Image (cartoon, rainbow over all chains, first blue to last red; front, side, top):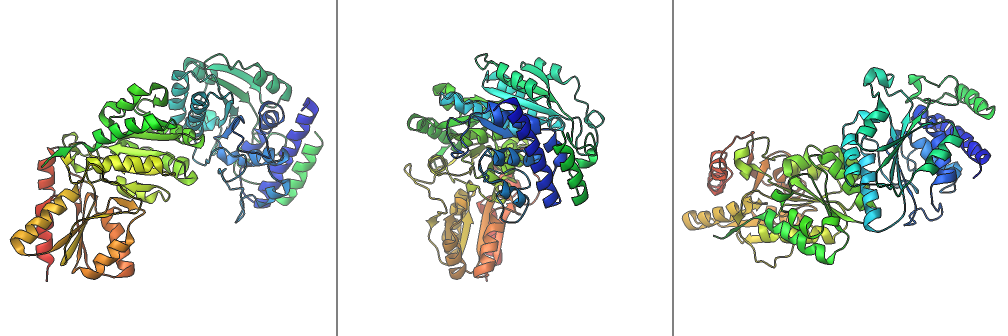
Length: 270
Length: 309
């Protein structure tokens, strides 16, 4: 995809996120919107996949560790042909494949989540499998910054370094807000790049809403270098909707019908 | 009576299966000498991953391997591989029905001198509560081997419970196990004793004493598969016995006694007695502990005699 198509994809993903969470009257729009540009770039330009053959064995693996942000993943999958966008309206409803937290029953979902801190370890296992099978596929794991409170992440960070997993890329959606408050108030993570670097990872920092920069940083990753990579993406929680941006209230609350109209109008005007 | 180590025989079986099954992997957590997975590690270093003292990480790495077509075994002590990564076992393995084999050693009271933190008395209950896990509690070293073989060759998550010390050999070396299977070790008509793991030995010894000294005919069922479980033998015993007694090296609640009681209550109610743990114990030798806390054949005999009409 060219950059205009990726930006258009990001817009559609945002509208999908807002529509499906509002329709469900629940879900997590804030941390989904902050990841929208990252997923638009990944699914538009970076990942190798076949949406008609979701289990294609050479596909790149995208693992959503922050599984509460599954609306962004469902939107990216639907917009790229894994299933019809109309199915997004079944999100969180009885008998749907689109669960409140992502589950492997959904085509394109690699890992069942819902308890934070597990995705990077899972990604280490997937990346080790690629090596055992002599496959070239890459493993990408999207983490929340609040999620890094979980100590298990740091166990996985050490393990990926020990096993020289150059085929593993962690992405931190650093939107600065977790459930209760701002991350620096709950458990300050700074200086975050230095933490990853001191554990032996190659660290990239990028504006998580600048799609051109995101493409550049993903394309600059040297997979031949046998150390794991982390891309720390500075983002804004609720990005694209004025009353949701940087507002902890919309971590886990959907827009009401009036707010939805306004939000979609704002996205369409960008 | 000959004794042998369930964990050592299991470790040797894992090594053996590694030769014919290239997808078999092991993820360990710095107790690989104790769990005997070091045998596999030495022969197949590319398929062995030591994540250090990090059991939560261990379980999710295994989940990632399983999701990619591997057959990962995770192995550590029962206390560290059950309570600590329970969330990872639940969300990361059970809810996705992934092909992860959890083989935990040093379970139960007979772990001994290390004391209550090391004596796993909750693990059966915890793994039974993980809906999709098959749960196997082998009664001796040969059954431990057979349990490993069954788990590796059967898709889906498995828990296998093993002991620290050597335990009496009760079975033939070529014993095969089945999911939902059981073995009647002693035939009998008055009462039935259901036991798993090390307690099968004590149940057999108790049956001998009951027969020779008291003229009581006790059937002993080795119920090595707890999920799925052989309901038919339980219902048959409930119908044919004056009462049932369960014997387990585990807390009373959530383990074998709870499981058998549920099935008996729903099908053919009879009294179900329990020989099990009702308190945290302490440090001591295996023999001292089973005698003090009543997990032995004497306790089984006394309970049977006290309840016979």
